Amino acid sequence: MKKNHISDSVLVKSYIQGDERSLEMLIKRHKQRIYNFIYSKVFDRDLTEDIFQDTFIKVIRTLKLGNYNEEGKFVSWVMRIAHNLVIDHFRKNSRIPKFESNNDFDIFSVLKDNEIDVENKMIKDQILVEVKKIINLLPNDQKEVLVQRYYNELSFKEISEKTGVSINTSLGRMRYALINLRNIIKKQNISLTN
Image 1 (tube, rainbow, N blue to C red):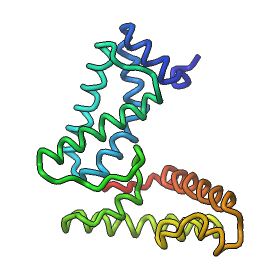
Image 2 (image 1 turned 45 degrees about the vertical axis):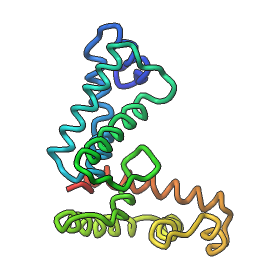
Image 3 (image 1 turned 90 degrees about the vertical axis):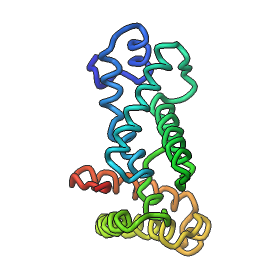
């Protein structure tokens, strides 16, 4: 079995049993996603690196102590740890950031954050320009649903009524729009965090 086909849970068990390379594989597999999530909240590369390191120190401690239970996905658990460390950082500095309800990096939560300084506003504006360019590459039906949802803040019911398609069709188009956005970003190697 190829190493990149080994599930997270098998790698976690292998690490707990003493195989250090399993943890390296887990970190390598999920680094970008976790790093992007942290950066989307703190907008500082050095701080992101510190919180990323602290996250995995906590992961290692928890695994070594045998306190990890496989209730959900490994990456979701790590994201919760990162999320809590970001909140701890802002509590210490008396500034609580705006968090969306999901545990993943969400470019749209970055675009909606109103409490940012001038430097971060410039970054946000540049990201907005890049996101609009990418959105224009989507098929029209997907672009329409995405724009109605994120920019016009319509519910899927309202989108359905406005476009004359079912809610399920609207949801499907949104799902494909987000998948296509990720693929375009990856294919064109676009960075939305610089």
